[in-house]
Image (cartoon, rainbow, N blue to C red; front, side):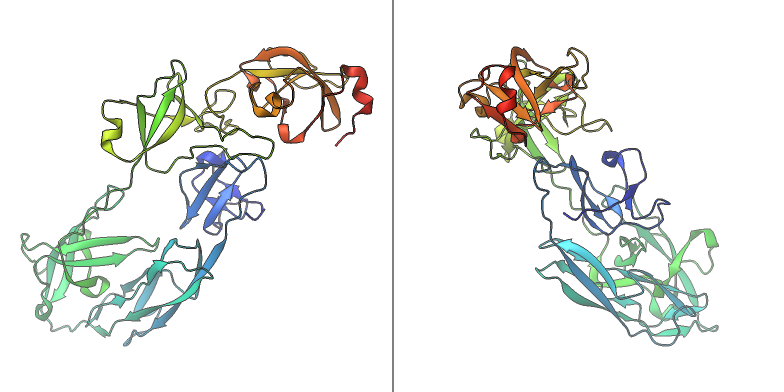
Length: 433
């Protein structure tokens, strides 16, 4: 994942709606995946999507390969000039290049707006290419057709009512009257679409239950006939495809009961990544639902798998401090159910370690519990000395269930352990890293 400086429109990346390349928030960053080394969010069409956990941020950042999909425009519109009799909206002017991952869906949309007094005699069409991004990217062509001519003054024009269709986001497009010449009466229930500048589409259909009018006020006019694209063979509104749902089983950390489930709109990360210093299996992510703490168990794909289970209403990832992922102070996910963590003492007490409540100035904890294999496979926790970034520590034989109380938390990938050392007097023989 490439490094760079970006700006967002809230105090926290987790709550931002979009990323920008300038401090004035005028230029959107390119679509793609972005991370603050805690969470990952994908920007699509200038809008940040829901956050997912950045499970690999403790080591090397994940590599996301993006490929260019470039749209060229073949403008076959006749009878008028761009910027004069008509304007184009959406993915124009070209070439327009977007970036996607391999296998990710791409799409381009161009719409047409005619100047007053003009129409498309054959209707406006745009091929608006879409598909799945291949490895290496691709180049596509958006072909535009429309035969523009002035609306004949002598032609008989009537206004026909077009009803708006429901959209994927739960809204409904606003309907209105569309002007047609008498010779071009729309077919009953014929479906039309209009591409919008943001790449989305509005769908309409001719509603014959509302009588045609010879004149209508500007407030109820929807468009001229040539500004909508007729979809041959399609009638009424298109079906709304429900967003996918992902169901997961949870364990209550208080009583170890596992008859709990929750429904998400996005896939959830189940496990931590196994690190080189661990021989244990990856640990499950920790969540908080209200005041209760849970550990995610597995994904459930059949309704019968969670019949009779208790549904969690709003489970959120939680960090070692008990802060949930919807807050700007969230530091990254904790793992499994709360456990017991060791407390270490800095041998050189003059080098004060910052701390929070419940710890002296020369104490620290670790990011892994005492039953982690890092300790158990090397003769137990309380043997030897530990070197961490040049500072020498010794286990105090004290423990805590709240390692988040310590601002200084020792990460095991940077700990050197000397089992032959017996007390702080042996610190001088340990080689600093």
